[in-house]
Length: 233
Image (cartoon, rainbow, N blue to C red):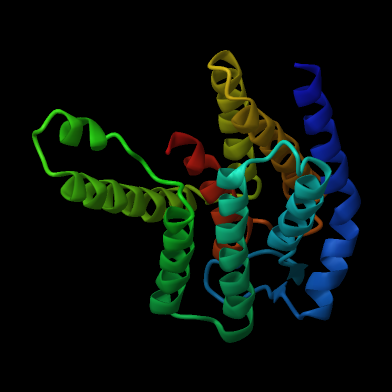
């Protein structure tokens, strides 16, 4: 358990330390949320959209630090997350419509699936002879794809106030850490610990320090969603 506590502390410390550089990068890329630019934007001052940048840098550092402990599935999640970050930055610059945003989610989901992260429970019916194996594989693919797209957007729908997604991610990751540790899944436990520290750092910056928003749709929202729902696959 000590390694998980250490991972939480490292992830949280990196999240705090990277906060100011992330804000600087967001400003230099002109990733700023302007008050009044949309009807729901009632904040009082221009605010850097730095949550996704912070997560990208911290996860990269964590992947380097724990590279011997993370397996292929975690690397697949990180690869898919990079796609979401790319479309997020593109959205902030070009104000993408729903179609390109859905394309980004689709590409990220397909990347995750093609790299081996998907459900396999329909194989049970194939092994029992109820359905052909190729049809079971197709169902596994479809269920995983719908799950990724659906839950990612469902989490976005609850994002109605500063810090709510980071808080949701923190609480969910704590439960995942307990469950994966009890079931002996070390890599997933380590990943859960990483998310706990990350979400705690995001909550600090977004809800307590209020230095930047992490709730923009294509920023940490989808990163947190993707990272959480892969535990259930």
